[in-house]
Image (cartoon, rainbow, N blue to C red; front, side, top):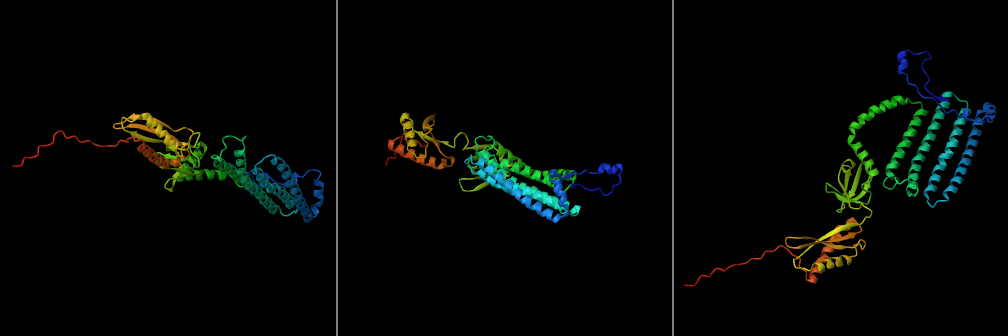
Length: 392
């Protein structure tokens, strides 16, 4: 049985028609041709009883399908028993149905041929069964692809490129490849003219590209952001335009950040891809350093100031003990000696609260120690008081 276009006229066409003719690839899916030579005599003997032959084929196909499914499940479970993850068990359960469906659908195609109905009806039923088989594997492949990525990501032996931040990118790529392959197979099965479709798709693609250039720019920027990973979900970032917040979503079209005012800001990937990004959670650790700038009056014991600042930092529960907090004198100011207290905190979102508490503690400690914090003030010197008028 061939899925091919029948020529309307058996006469040879002229040169112009030959140039315009489109050759459609023939696809042979005649299941009877796949039978072993030892079975073909029994097949030929039962052709006189098509209904009985079709029923026998369906029953045998169901039994063989269940047997193949059992063998696959048994062997796969033995292999999966060596691992601790449940993902491989889910993958085995996912593949059981399409494996049985493949065997059973092939026997249905063989039973259709055994019925000896008209060629057109047999061809249509075979194409329909083959299409259902392709769709069955497509649905299983889409779910299996996501599970495989999770298995590889959790496995220490997997490629380092597959990480939680790149899973959405690879998941989308796998889905696009599977859908494309399934669509191509369905077109071949139904004898669709692929050359004309590809030509039309090229023209439509150009038109869509011009009409949706902003959307495509966001799409490609999203792919580059996911692949390059300048930030990930949960990071605190600040853009050169002033937006600052925690990344809550990284998609192919946009990135969303949640500000400290509990306002979600959606930024197109084409914009954020060309922006200067300050990732406060980046680096080898999520810890972040804060600077508390303090000024003291000239004449103050500088060693006492450094000791007091470090002591205040050690007394705060939210300040990290590793790295150690430290105090540094930075400048001789116009009216003060300027110091910086450098200390580390666990999360960038704690910056505002901890800075507030540190300023309060430092002020109270300096007040107890009698250390003057200078401020702008003016002293007025009167050189000579005017002589009061004498009474007459």
